[in-house]
Image 1 (tube, chains in turn brown, red):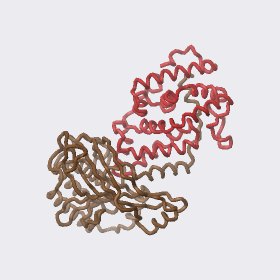
Image 2: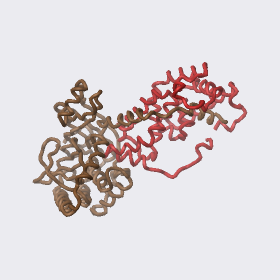
Image 3: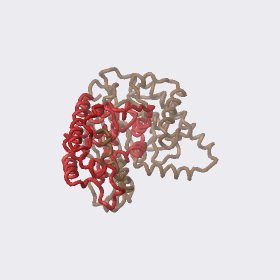
Image 4: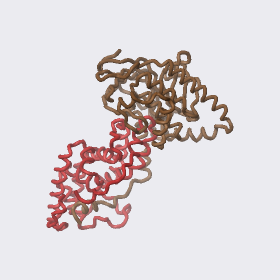
Amino acid sequence: MDDIELIRSFRADVPGPSAAAVARADRSWQRTTRGRRRRWAPRIAAVAAVAAVAVAALILPNGNDGRLGAQSARAAETLRHAARELHGLPRALQPGEYWFVRSKTRWTTSVEGEGTGAYTATGLEIREEWTAPDGRRRWITRPVGSVGFPSAQDRERWQGDGRPDLKVSPSEDRTRTSFYIGGRKQSYGDLVALPRDPQILYERFRDAAVECECGNGVDDQTFVVAVELLRTAPLPAEVRAAILRAIALIPGISQRPERDVTGRPGVGIAYNGTQGRQSLIFDPQTHELLGDRQGAGGTADIESGIVDSMEARP
Amino acid sequence: MTSLHAASQAPDRSDAIAVAASLASPPAFAKVFERHHAAVHRYLARRLGTDLADELAAETFAVAFAKRDRYDTDFENARPWLFGIATKLAHRHWRREERELRAYARTGVDPAAPPPDERGPARADGAVAGPALAAALAVLTPEERDVLLLYAWEQLDQPEIAAALSIPPGTVKSRLRRARARVCQTLAAAGELDPLRPENHG
């Protein structure tokens, strides 16, 4: 035996974690859902999402393909209209330029109460974010208003838990992140050069969704991949328009009236049937993109523009 | 290096994909947890005992999840990243680790082992080699121990260890060489290792 083999035999028979310890650890990362998110507010919990899919599968009646088809057609029409009316970044960013976005974000977090069971809390914060074409980001957040609860039961459980202070502190951070299509890293140059043909772009998103094997099916995940790119990368209007037209090709999208997280009325476009769903929200008159929602959470855009430093505002 | 690290595998990008996907869809991170929690727990339990491993393994994934937007998806496999986080968390407890290693070396009873009623069959490291190994690991600096255990137990290669611990590759190389030399010395003195096997000192 050499030294490495001997060391490998040392404490080689440690027992594995108990089922309870694994479950605790699994809950532990899921509870950190208020971590360093980018633009999306967190999903409430994996379990809730999975349960919602199961329910949706049960309640969607058979034989309504015609109605769903009409729904998709209306949603696609809204997206194509929005693509023609796009505001925001008119051209690709140059080195030394930054895309600034001020938004209101509604966060939700799931808290494991002592003896009362889990409950959800929610609140609003103002978020200012600067993004450079090389992926550097800076953001500042500060809370607005007080923490609330989506339901009376959540509030009761919080009270039973001894009313812990769930206040969010202002935060500031810098990081450097890549841009992604699904799990594939992209440079800003790659993104600016994306095909403008909606069908080709749709297939790119779909390939990324297939590769991921995640989410609630390929169409749902294609929607997630496309929306994430749209909402996190400072893309010129032409590319954003192509992304909206590609989303219009995803089977199973639908629309319904939906308010953004600040209460502005809008048209919500989402993938069908997923409760706690992700949606893009457009102004019903101008078709301007107002923001996105993800279950109870989400982001409403307030102001954006090109600036020349990570401190400057338009 | 030793032949332990010779096997090369086809790139499996599923960790990189799951981490990137979890940015948009946090439940996707469950895959990373399912795939690696047991191994991270085992590593921590071997260093610090099961109870502390329960806590630190959970913290490892909570930290990883919170920092997932900084995960470099050039790493196809999340192991170096996760073991880096776990090692940095374990590092805070190095005094306890050394105390327990010394106690094991002195008494032959491993304080980090579970109580006898929870223990399976006799320990694989055996009554003789166990205390000698504990003594050998106890004399290392905490930094040397980090590198050596990631190398020997988790079979991370030197560039992976460098990335995991955010230290230069040259530092990994020198720490590993020093650590192995000191372990060999201690083990040879205890009669557990034939000192005349130079090929062991890669």
